Image (cartoon, rainbow, N blue to C red; front, side, top):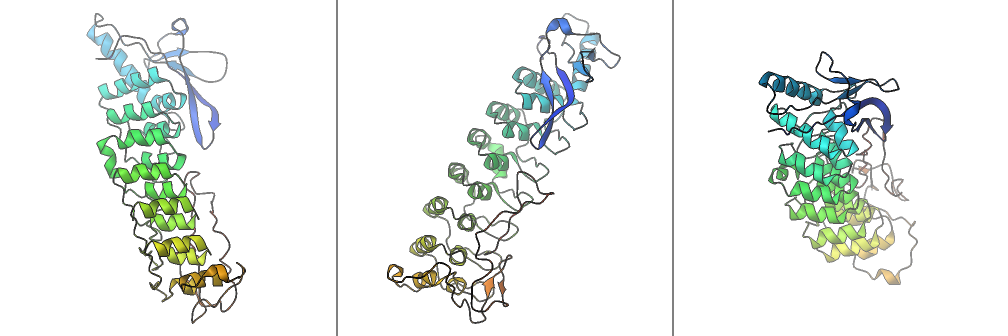
Length: 375
């Protein structure tokens, strides 16, 4: 049963924009500032300024007539489910502002009315998404306990688990993974084709990657766009610590992307000598060919890489990193989509520059568009 304590909620519309998320503001009002009840059942106040202000009507005492109790509850539910011009409900706003008392009262109202907690605003964010973004693990736990869907997708196809990995939210991730309903989220791909583990690897969050693997995430999961495994993404990011971690955790060093490239192809094409040595030591097969019939040595960036692959002592051979070798019988180099380009013969490949992330105006600020030049 909903308690008898009066909850007053002030909602100001469009007071500001915080980062990529447009939100309204919430605060508590003292009891003496309540106004008269308008025909819709809301308490309407008129403070200085152009913004409308409303108060959540009081939940009546049990001694009040049933009709009066019902009227007030319906008015409270109407306010709790009302969406402003940004699609935010009072629950969205309470989450962003960290108003715990109002947050719990609104959840009670929504559950009493059998309404879903997964209400989307105009950015397709639910209160759970906002609780993760604003680092409020206690609210994340409360929402999940009361039935919020951990697999709900935002406009970028991201679940709460994706957002934890995007924003390095260890506490929130721990809470989500503690709920059995979260297991379905481990292998969901966002609209960039990435699982939460792919994101954790790309962002360099080894602790989060370990938590996901402990929860059962697939260490060899292929992304949808290019078929890269987490190890390939770690090589692409030139993150030696992450590469060591994934290998120690038992990943398949010989998994192949859609174009047939392995992590060894990627490391050779980027001139990552130490990574090439580590992969070979960990069982990488230097004879595997991609779908253009190129072995790793054929896409090697320089002679030092080729010497390591051929088992020579590269410490005794002095070459410059910029020196290029003939990379295949048909002189191919890997292009952006992982295909060899027959247009390059001897000489340096134009794609040997460090990999960069591209962001378009239509891309989410949370999930940048990626290029995959070596897979």
